[in-house]
Image (cartoon, rainbow, N blue to C red; front, side):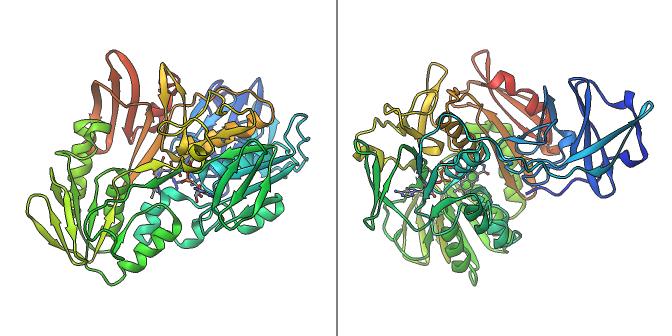
Length: 501
Ligand SMILES: Cc1cc2nc3c(=O)[nH]c(=O)nc-3n(C[C@H](O)[C@H](O)[C@H](O)COP(=O)(O)OP(=O)(O)OC[C@H]3O[C@@H](n4cnc5c(N)ncnc54)[C@H](O)[C@@H]3O)c2cc1C
Ligand code: FES
């Protein structure tokens, strides 16, 4: 998580010249301790909070597009007239401020009371929606349904043992010990009660009865639906190697996985991280923050290079090295006896715990058993609907049309936005989902953000210097820009969004 930005000037309570408010951008300032944005929208002046409701990103450094302001940190989109959080990862609206125009000056002195007008119930909606899952996509779908005024029955069945949590934080500040557990839930328990969302945790759905419109849980409970949303996500790949079923071998997906790892390394001195993908590398950074000796084992010559290119990858690996991580590259793990980890190059490492982070696979078993079409994910159309008109899939588990082929993306914001898109489509939107994928990753206080479908890029151009944490990498497939990654150049990255669909 990044640090809150300092207050931008000017002080709007003292007034600013009308002419200082740009026609297409925003003017960032403050009122007392609150950061506020002024914007001209369709000839009217509006004032909204300048602090993103996700992690507090400085919206004044974001990008204005039409009526919207997009957050520089994780790309949440807010409406500048109403403050509405239109696109994840933020869900709460921005507060709106009262604008007073006196002659040629604009004053902002007080917050407007929240608009609590009930949203009218949508005309077209299924009576009962059941969502299988309790992660990013499931939560965002349920939240958006209620936000849009859906008043029917809404059930969330989650195998997790906690209400939906901020999963990306599990390998970042929470694992490092700098984010307390109370930061982890996406919403407190009262939210589900207030919104009449029947959230059932510790509930594993065992079968989908698609012809008769109901699902059953492993414990034998039945839930009837008119529309079904499958948001079962992905599960970590386990290594079938000698000793990798020992209790001090861990994976990271759920809050309870991370709690177990934290408890397991409480008195540890050293840990091995198997796999040098983003989650493994983030975990290495977080475990260093706990003072552990960290070994990373991976088959690549340069971890992450296939995704972010050699310059950025080299920078991140050097960052880890300079923070004391030991890399064992171009080699694999062979066996673990609870204390000694044997590598394929003959090295043996004495470690107290092993964290396996070698990727995930989509949780498609339920869908496959119910004869829904699956191929590395549940196959859906551009509206995220399966071949059955009342069954949708979204998030890590969904494979949807993109360009000339199909895409399945494993990113937090993408999963949430797919959940939001499904909610809209359940209410009759017929929305074609084509948001570019976006993810961020956090290592020793440095954030790298990535936008686009970069798989199979053939050429990369880097502007700026990764070593200065100030660079923008553009990834091309032949001559077409397919993705971009930035450290410290958030607005440049946001500006590339229209080209990266
Ligand atoms: C440690 C970690 C760090 C990450 N960091 C980032 C990051 O920095 N940036 C980023 O973009 N992405 C990150 N990701 C990826 C991101 O979290 C996922 O892309 C996102 O959570 C996918 O959302 P989802 O809803 O599809 O699946 P999930 O969030 O995995 O949710 C799936 C849900 O389905 C439930 N479920 C599965 N099967 C059943 C069943 N049979 N019955 C009932 N419930 C079931 C599960 O219990 C779970 O609640 C990270 C992931 C992890 C694990
Ligand atoms: S802080 Fe704004 S989207 Fe995360």
